[in-house]
Length: 117
Image (cartoon, rainbow, N blue to C red):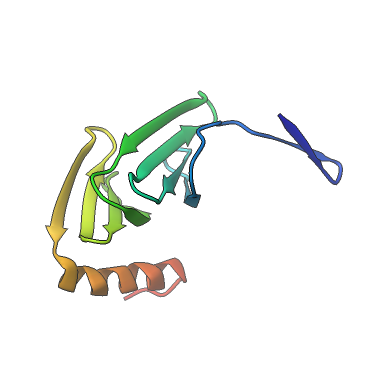
């Protein structure tokens, strides 16, 4: 499908039928875009525009935010806590429980605004 906007043509590159696809994040190291389909069952997506590869990972709970880590894993915020997800293996772990997670989410939001601890 093509949607003309001004003098540009916009094309749908992934027709995945998300309920609410949001939280898009470009990773300049991998040169891919990540995004979330938040409503349960939540899904994490990754798309590589160079290869047109679209990867998806169903999540065990509702996920609401993500951040890339230097080691290649992702921090994923959920209603149960903060999770570490490894896209290379598909493994998800929860190293933090909700009380710690609340502060970590606040720090993630501040980091997104340019604030550094």
